[in-house]
Length: 461
Image (cartoon, rainbow, N blue to C red; front, side, top):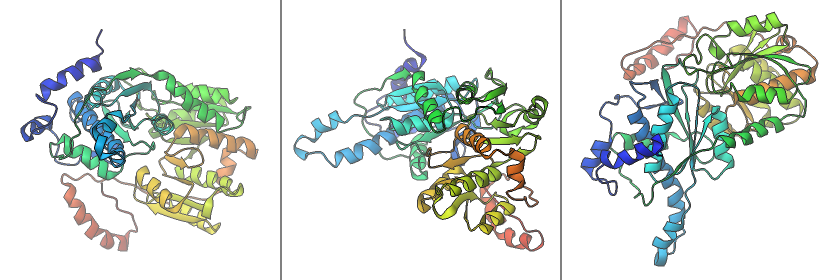
């Protein structure tokens, strides 16, 4: 019996009359004329409303051109090693690893996964679909297998009607802007490089692979390191709903779980890291030591102390950074964060002799700066935290586990640890939507004038 992805793959030759090679006319047919003029890729992949920007047709094309571009990343280095005398034979022997697909719990994720898999297999790439999985789980599996890349289907903290596509390279990190542009050019019919597809790929359902990610989380802490802690988890009806309770309980924690039975329709609705009131009430009501709220794909987390006070990414970075510094595991005493970080955090860290580095908003910018500096810890106020001792990308589950362990070993409450760190300065963040993104140039000109009377940071995206 044919799977939906196989059916879609069978339809592709009808969408493209002759797959090898593509003529200009066929390339034009392969592009989507309904796409917006603005770039598809934002600060965290492609994201939008399902049925408008995010459609099966777009996912199919994203899959095809992602497969094309990732295959070329593998084939080009191999081609340089071929003997011209038998280059054709050698080329046929090159093994192309799979692309790993994971997804959150949105009702649209299955549809997008099938279309994406069809596009990837049409490009000659095998697909391993692990099903419901946090974004950092996909990144981990890509980096620890022979996969050539990965795609996470999620719109993070966005409402259920939205969805998105986050693309990872073979190292398990998000692909650079240059590759994003290559993929987008292919989708829009402007890409000049096309690798002939000798054989279609195969799509497999591989949920058992997630066990390796779960094991890596458990092994990053000591056995029973959370014994004696009562913790509330708000799982946002999202990707962490199954894995997070499993890991926390395995390490000895007593759990109260909120929003832990995804139905595809309620992800992030009045819950999770953007709606903390229910977590705050539950922590106080159950007399818990602390609580954690994840977003839909669990790549970020915020905490709540036993009094119900919110502990954001700035405080998490300060506390974890201080702990790593005491252990001699924070090179240069450096923390990398973004322009959104609170000024109180910056001055307090610098007062301890630490180096405080700011980047543009987005974990990709933080990651790039960490790479350049050789820094081990970085993140965002929103709860995206990257610790290079344990992984390559922001991981909400990993961050929560280590903050809980830090609390347990300190013998103090989270409220006391926060009180001994720093005081936040008043901060107000406002988003101003404009119809034309080119108008951001006017904001750049206005910023110095506005700052004279009201010190502020303007961000345009």
